[in-house]
Every structure is written in C-alpha cells, then in structure tokens.
Image (cartoon, rainbow, N blue to C red):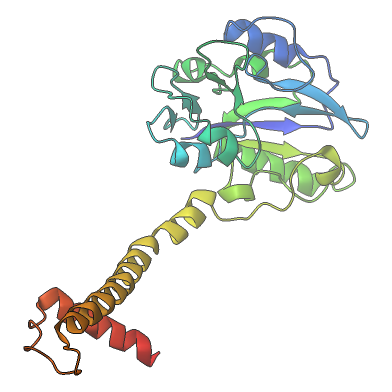
Amino acid sequence: MSAGLLIDTTRCIGCGACSAACKEQNHLPLPIEAKTTAYTWTTVQQTAGVNVRRLCMHCLEPTCVSVCPVGALSRKPDGAVVYDGTKCIGCRYCIMACPFGVPKYQWDRAIPVVGKCILCTDRVQAGLPTACASVCPTGATLFGTRDDLVREAQFRVANRPDRYVNHVYGLTEAGGTSVLYLAGGGFESLGMKTDMPRQPLPLLTWQVLSKIPDFVLLAGGFLYGIHWITQRREEVASLVTEEGVLEKEPPSPGFFRLLGRWLSEKWRKR
C-alpha cells in the first residue's frame, strides 16, 4: 500500500517541529529557512493568516521521474519519490518539469545535487511514520496509507462542512499525490496551484511524443521528394543540347527515386 501524509491546515499552529525533525532525520544543516531549498525540505509558511506546510507532493505518476534521463529520480512502491545523487548529471530537467516547483538545486556547491523531501522512506520501510508526522503536536500532519488518508480527509470534510472547504487537495491534482491537504478556505489563497489537470502529466507528454515518429517519417519523405525532384531536373538539364534535344535517355529512377516521386505527387494533390 502506498503511504502518504494528510496535512490539515486548520490544525497547524506553525511551531516548526516538522521542519526541525526533517532536518535531524536527514542530517540537513540549520537554519530552517522560510521557503523550501536544497537544505530545507519542508517548512511552514503563513499565507493569508493560515499556516501551510510546503514539501514534495510525491505524485502518483511523477513528472520529475519521467523526464530524468539517467534514473536519478524514482518512485518507490511505498509512494516515496526519491533521489539518487550518484546518478544525477545536473541537467535540472526535474526542476523545470515539476508542476509544484519542488526540487531545489545546491547552487552553492562545486558539485551540486538536488534536494527534496523523500518521505522518510527508510523509516517507512521499517514500519515507522515519517519524522515530521511523529512530532506534530496537534495532528496537523497525519501519516498513513494513502487510501486511509483519503477516507479520513473525506470524513472530516463531510462531518465538518463549517470547518473545511469541500475539496481534498492532491486527490486528483496532476493525477493524484501522496501528500493531501485540507483547508478552511480556497486553496488558491494559500498559494497552491488550482489549475492542475486531473490526468497525470507524463501521460500528456506521451501523447505528444508518440506522434513524433509519424511526423518524422512524413517530413522525411516530403524532404526526400523535394530532393529527388531537384536532382532529377538537374540530370535532365545536363543532357539537353543547345538545340533543346536530349542527347540520350535520362537514367531510370531507382526504387527510392520512385518513392520520392510518389510522395511528391501525393503532396502536390493535397
């Protein structure tokens, strides 16, 4: 079962215990910064008077994983999207591709790597909750399987419509995420993207990439047809005398030239 987190912004008091626990668990240097960086993987920001945790959303079908050319990013069966710095070539495609703007680069190092939340995958595999969830004093961060967290979030929304907006953020955004949010008002006012497509973003990429082979073949055939026509005219012109009479019959076109002629005729009829 895929693990995840349910973050209830109505319960967060902004104590920062989650950020401190994350630093300790992952041996990250102090201080706790006001926004996520390569050294601060989670932090609490006050937006519109509400304390909002920021961290990797751990997408069910992560875009960062789909664009990484060397497999430095991967999604584990427990739901964690993790990073292997030994494989990274520094292309930073993950930074550009992430719809939530999560991965951050160590710009201050000669040999930098990417930093992001890894959902305490070692703890989770050992049967423990994430470090942040284990220290939260108010239950604002709840750890569990994603299915259980979805049910819990929907139960809270249904039973306290006066407390929560009728939406679980992360349930469908970008195809779904392992980190879910509840809020007492609009998520847009909390600085969260609300225009996300419901289908996984890697699927949108594939819909484009899958058409490239057909386009390449068509474009290649068209360009070869133009090349064949030009070359054929030059061959014929070289055999014409000053009186405008062919000295001899032009050489018979081969298979590829016939193919080029066929393609050019097809194109001309369009």
